[in-house]
Image 1 (tube, rainbow, N blue to C red):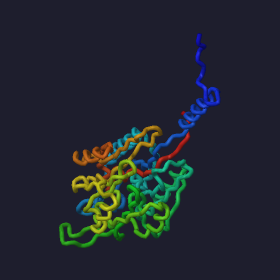
Image 2 (cartoon, rainbow, N blue to C red):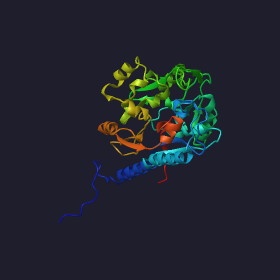
Image 3 (cartoon, rainbow, N blue to C red):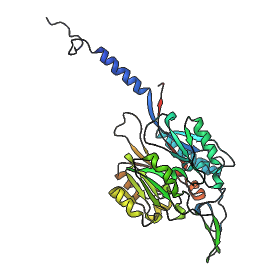
Image 4 (cartoon, helix red, strand yellow):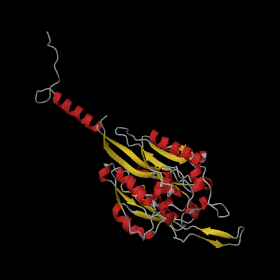
Length: 355
């Protein structure tokens, strides 16, 4: 008569129960640490046009546009819900009546290594040097980040730099977008009304010397902007998908001398935007690839402004990325910023969990 079988034996002739216990402990430890993307948004309670510093903020007569605040708050809440439903943790910068531009924290600065999972204590955020009308925002961002356990750094105040709106990872490189810095003003013109406003661009190309060493050995590709309506790089360019390998790009917003360099760097992964989609700020979209452990292959999403073409949505899907559209038109039509402008990417944060 055969005796009942016991636990399988190891090569040494002993039970593997300790090994199973170790594996279970490893699984518990894995559950105790999670990766989650953290995003910065600014409370829209006081959103308004203060400086009128880009072409979207003013009427043809040069007067500043008036914000429908109730509609803006509703749209802001819709974007926040969308991010949270994707599993993104949203950190909200408190409102400040003197700083209505806080709703555009993509200009707050730039987080190093946004796609590298790190604890908050190891993250570093470089604060931007904004236009004079928005300069007061810097202390508000620094305070919100400090309260979240994230350290900040500052630049030479003589260097104009508007954060991840002009400096962001794309494929195997970083893109630094820049343009001519101007004193914003009205000048006479042969038209009706007989004047036009000069806006200029936002980031000083000399900031490259400070940024490039921090992202080495990745190359920094300089791209000059040409259209004032696309005054930040993230309104004409958007890297998305796994590894941010694909690039939405608006040719008319890019210097003719720099366009061939983008074609060479991205090849078939470059997706050229048509004018209608570009003017709806299709490039001002937020790319997100799931950071949930064990979710391989990880899902990729692109949160895009509502109203873009079905053709573009199909092209995004063809690249294995799920587009999600959100109406933030009040922020574009009145303030000159869409989805991405309203989100500061604080990277993938590693946090312990009691669950």
